[in-house]
Length: 226
Image: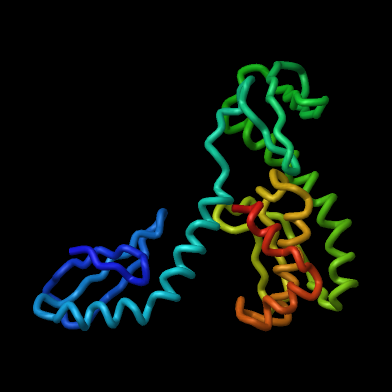
């Protein structure tokens, strides 16, 4: 049986159980409700409708995770490489030293003879890491000065399900390596987003108001990440 929860389809599965259970399934956010065998449909509907906002938030989180998951690459000539929101055509050649440089519309990757796909990927990721660290080191102090919010430390990590994280207890910020693929204004947004968590731990009205104050177009920047 399929029901509608404020426009969201949900599969209802009857089971030998005592309580209702609602699950939002990855990766696409499908909704499944497990319900006792004889529970009236009206009760299931009322329960589901009370969870509509929560369902939307979970689906939004899953869309964000999928958005920052990079496309599978083999790192061979002809593939597309994204750098700060611009697309380059990858050209791979062998040489005595590793190297990666950008010239006009081309990203020229020099590899060691006989290297594996994993080795090529690791080299590109280290190149991304260096670029991201340079930009973050330049931009983070700017946003700390503007907002008065300062982290104790920050680090780049190859996160494939989040653009950034912040631990308000340790005051540490993590930035996803994948941000080097996106426009620089997206990096600014993620930096501000994570710094704001030092002040507000959730994403409620106070959090959004703080973003509105310092970055009125943050919603448009967030869309670029999706």
